[in-house]
Image 1: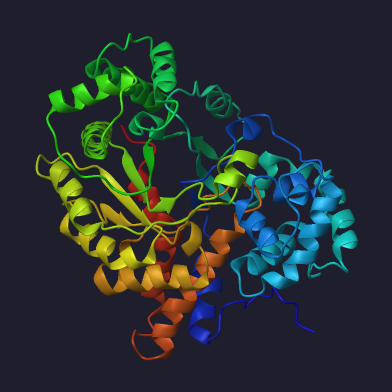
Image 2: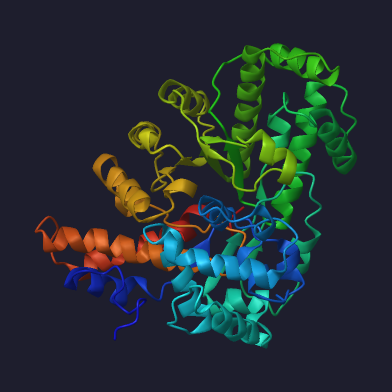
Length: 469
């Protein structure tokens, strides 16, 4: 019987199979946005068992477990690693239709060379099989990256991070993959959230800038950005529940900053003004450094107060936000573009209702000499599945140029998630191959194959230019 994950998985016709096997399959991976631990890469971490490498920190799996009614002790609690794995094994058959079912078996196939489907009945067998393999030298963090043909990893790093692990990686001749920091100053932007003043003090300490004013604050951020640049950073990242655009003067932003520093309440319009002015400052800074700016727009976080109090943030209680975006996005991009200080920008939509808004806004602010300067980013988070990826690529094709797309990323905390690039590539070939078979695109495999390879790898290499200034 044909295994579930086979050579032509998700490739329903001749054209899709030709494009995938002939062009996409063996391209290297440029994983320009993820949440891997630089420390685990630097220290070449070995994982004690499948729960540690596969389940810990994976809120996708945690949400599925909760949906099936599994007790929290088997998810984020103090149950044994074995028992947590067994609960996941029981859950997997019920994830059919969810991308987790495909991802699970792709990872088992590619990393553990097994066609066994995970279930309650096979849980013990796979626990023992996979754990035995995890003890082998080829299952260290660095070897998994090497096996996965990854050329670049962009981690997600706070401006106050010392980046020592990135320096260790850079100086390690045994690591051929570039592991570069990404500048994520969310805490510096969210002045109305708890902990802002404490964060400012930490920023002052690490930057060695006495922060007595908003101007000092911006100097400290700029100093940290320059430090990141020296260590190899070429990408910034922002996680935004909404995209603010409420222009104000520097004095207004400075006054709002002072109010926050004194512990005074900040009105919603003041928060929007501060965020707008600070994000525009950052956008201009990124442009001066030659960086790309990522905007991840649309999560509504920590919605269950009860569970937030119990298990904390980033544990699977976030969802899609609903808000007006078009005027804010176009206004924000225009404010940078009007002075020719708009950096290369990637905009990710968590709410698929915003796809056309984002795709059409991107078309307003492209730049001479840069293919796809403003990008409609890949299917992200809740859209990181078959329908979401195909929808994003179709919407981009309808309103822009799919050929300029910089492709997929894992956005993951797991070293086993590189199969998401394979998943994406199969769907990309399914989409383009479908055009060919429907007579909507010529059967010109040389041209289409080159386009596929560009989307899988070449466009990202040229876009990020990590060896540039």
